[in-house]
Structure formats: C-alpha cells, structure tokens
Image 1 (cartoon, chains in turn red, purple, cyan, yellow):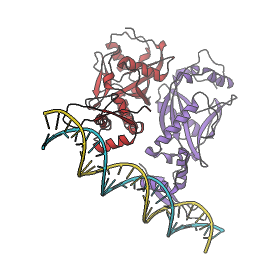
Image 2 (tube, rainbow over the protein chains, first blue to last red; image 1 turned 45 degrees about the vertical axis):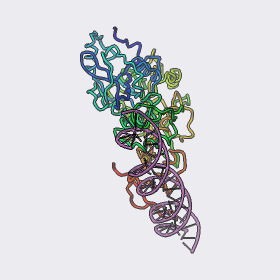
Image 3 (tube, each protein chain N blue to C red; image 1 turned 90 degrees about the vertical axis):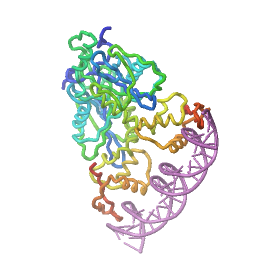
Image 4 (cartoon, chains in turn blue, yellow, orange, purple; image 1 turned 180 degrees about the vertical axis):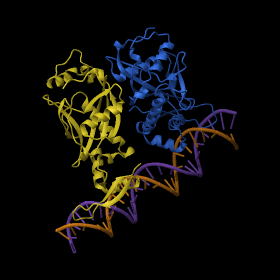
Length: 234
Length: 234
DNA sequence: TCAAAAGTGTTAATTCTACACCCATGC
DNA sequence: GCATGGGTGTAGAATTAACACTTTTGA
C-alpha cells in the first residue's frame, strides 16, 4: 500500500470527525487505533483538490461505516500551532512500514475542520483504513488518551452537541427509525449527562409535535406496552 | 508594493471576518472596496506558517481597525468548490497593476475560516490594506453585492450572532463601556431585526444580574435622566 | 390480583406579558 | 404646571414542574 501523494489532496488541510452512536444505554464515539503504536485517534482524512469539503467528510465516513445518509455538522476548525506534532505522525507512518520521502506532505502542519456525526449504531459496518488496524466504539466517558488535540476536539463536539440538542431536535438521529419514549429519553440523558424526569420528558416531546405515534411494542414484560414513535418527516 | 510570497503563508487557507459595529441606531459591518474594479469584499487574510489561526485573524483586524482586544468568534469554515473563482482574484490583482507570476498561489483554491467580531464603533481607526482603496462601514440591510461567497458568509454570521445573542450576552461588545438601557435595547433590536418591549427588556436585562448600575446621565432633555450601566466583569 | 412500567390529569409554582402608574427633568 | 421618557408595581396569562392517579401487561 503506497503512501498517498500530495498531488491528489489539498495540503495543510484535514478534517476530523466525532461519530456519535448510542448502544446499551451509553453514548459512544468511533476511534481508530494505529498499528503497533497503540495510539488512538479520531477518524479523519484529507480533501481532494476538486472536492467539496463536506463531500470529503462524507466520503471518509462512508468508507468506514458504510453509511451514505448521515447527520453531519461542522462545529469548529482547529488551527493552533501546538497541534503540529510531526514526530507523532512520523512514528505512525513508520510503524506501518512506510519509507517516508523527504519533506513528505503528511508531516506538514495541518488545520483541521471538525465535524460531528450522529448515526444509528445498529446500521454501521466498521471498516478500518490503511494506517489503522482497528476502528471501534468507545464509551464517551471512558476514552483512551488521544493523539494531537483530539481530546479537545471531542470535548468541543460534546459541548456543541449538548447546546444544539434542544434547538435542533437531533437526538433521534442516534436511534433506529422507530423507538420508544424511554429509549429517546435514554439518549437525551446520555448526551446531557443527567437524569431527566420521565413524565416531564414525555410531555415535552409530545408537545413539540415532532413525533408520530405508531403501534405498541410488546416486549413480553409484564407491564403496559410502550408505543413506538418516529420523527415526523419535516 | 510587491505581491505576497507563498513561502510566508499557508497555501489554500484564508480567513474572512465579519466585523459588526453599531452606530446611529444601525447595525453595520466593515467592507473593503477594491481598486478600479469597484468590487466589495469582507476583510480577510492569510495565515503565516508559524502563526496560530486565531492570531492571524487578530493581526488582520488590528491592522485595519487599530484594536487589539476584540470579541471574536469563529462560526464556520467555507470549503465548497463553487467559491473558487480565480478570474475574480486575477482581475483584482491586475487592477492593482501587479504582474502575476505563473501558477501564483493567490489564484489557487482557498478554504476560508470565517469569524465574526463585535467592536465599539467609536474606537475604530480604519486603515485600508494594499489591495483595497477603502474600508468603510455599511448598513447590514444595505450591503452592496460582494465577491465570491461573501454574501453567504455575512448571512451565516448574522444568523449565528442572533442565535448566540441571548446565550452569550454579547450585545454589550458593540457599545462603549457605559451605556443606557435604551442604547442596549437598540443594539438588540438592530441585531434581531425586530422591536422589543421597553419594560420587558429592562426587566429581563436586570434580572440576568449581569449589569452594574452607575450614575445617571443628564442629557439636557426635559425628562428623567437614565442610569448608565456597564457589564459586570465575569 | 400483583408488580412494574407507560401514559395522562391536576394542581402548584414559576415565569412572562401587558398595562398602569409614579418619578425625574427642563422648559 | 406640563410634556417627555425612565423605572417599577401588579394583575392576569402562559408555561413549567411535581405528584398522583389510572391503565396495561404477563406472571
């Protein structure tokens, strides 16, 4: 596998994505683990010279998750000098057995446009890329140490997600098409990091007039069956 | 005046700034007018190779306004291919009498990180840069046509400013240190584009516990003198 | 018939709105 | 005094929060 050539990509510009999923009551994100080094990083990539910025992000997410339709939001661009750590990138490339050319572009200073994505955990088929031997879900409050400023990027993503949660009613993007009110509440609680009152939550969601109610879900448990809901089409 | 050399700046990366000011009851932004062409653009610039992104923006704003301490917020990065219009940039450079080298870097595709700034209109000393013969204030609802996607950038800046107005209590950055409640209300009305109720506004601002009340301002008018207020230090 | 969880009704608390009222100021 | 605009009191409306109550389900 050859190293990517600078002629194909915009130099100095990258993107990083914080991909949120929800499973077993926990909010999680996708991380890559790099060969040999044992280092973790956000899934990111470069922008082709004739490609829209957002299309580059979608391309990268599709390659790694198999999903084409994804809720995607740009939230910040990171451009401090302190994030420039060529030795880290050099180690990662070398651990993959690459011989690094003189003045290789991937060792330059990079500015990174960060996006967060919300996806249905169940729909994903994870595929590692060339430099990493694994991509997997990690609980948001049990993340390993990340390279560069990726910790900061995750924190900012989480902060932005929380701020946008009510305004944009985006919690449903983390669930399957149909879900119970309890599941939706669990998503909100995981994102906000706090417990919510059951009855208030239910009333608030219903009053927003954004949910369609469908048939009941019989779980076999000995209690009233909850309704299934879906988000209204705009 | 020589053209800037690529060796000094990061290629393909620029910033644009939407600088808001408030004067005579109107919300305004700074625009540059380019020599000869009569085209208008946002004040922007490039990032030096060893410079933090935000420091580049501050440097540019200082050169043009003389202000060092500025409320500055990054709100979006624009990276669509459609914003790449080398002919426009070529025309601007040539109108300044420059001979353009082969493959000149300023004619490449650029990604622009956009910031908005809030400043006290009275404190500004405007200084044009090399390529433009004027920099001046323009009312937000009477803007001339702008080059590239700068119209879109302005709209997005305004939208973000409105969304952040209440959350971040930033309206005061457009006023002198001390101001009357009426002036503050005028700022909010100009930003939101709607009239607010005088008594409700006063009560709301006071209830937020973010203002210090100072001496009265005697204007010479035949009515009760309004108090001056300032924003509390954090 | 019981426990568990879902859904809704009701009342209290709080916040928001509208309007009125009083106050200070200069003529 | 009077007109003008600044500041606050208060009653009603609207929204939110808290708690209790009823319903449904399978054992």
